[in-house]
Length: 246
Ligand code: C5P
Image (cartoon, rainbow, N blue to C red; front, side, top):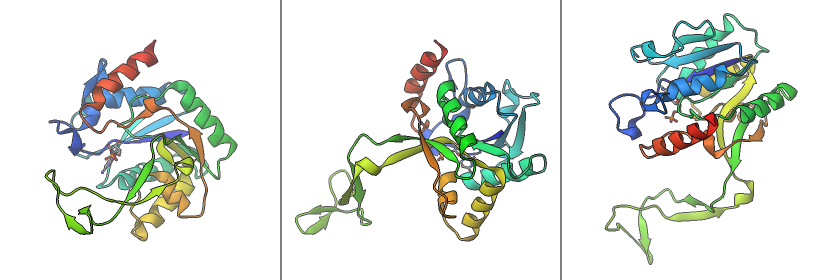
């Protein structure tokens, strides 16, 4: 099997001078931590990293020069980045090979969690599998109008426009998708191409497969697999990474 790491995002929410995957944490960049989690898994033969074509930071990665790691060009969206990587991979690997797509921004991936996910994906290659965690909080679906309703009238609070609840979802059935997400190379490429052609905005691979009528399997992930999004996430990631090394 192979892996793809989409790492061509610019991480605007971090407000940093460089893309978030290059921030240093616990002695390495977030991207190098992410690569090392996949690198250590012997079933993964090759890791494609999708980067902005003008990315000059990757040159300092400890994985430059490794035969197992190949840099490819990313695209304007996450799914375009993944698709570019899949097209490159298809020149070497067959449609039936499994591919694990894993966000660069999830540097903390416990080996036993990855192992379990891959075991399930090998058992059910046509369905595919991804990490996910059940939601703990009560989930509110908000109305399209981002106005704060006071009584019957719409108004803006002293903190600006705030969302209002349209309905409450049944949290028993809600899971939060993480990565890696594992599918057969050919199936995933077709699903992502079709999603793009139909203008379906997707933010993970499973959604593209679902749109083809596939029901991927959810494998319990971990809070440690969190996606680094805000600056305060870095302290938590540093803590999680130190736990992994123990
Ligand atoms: O923006 P978000 O945090 O959802 O990005 C998830 C992953 O997709 C990140 O690892 C990011 O680098 C990657 N990405 C990409 N190409 C883009 C946008 C995001 O590879 N154009």
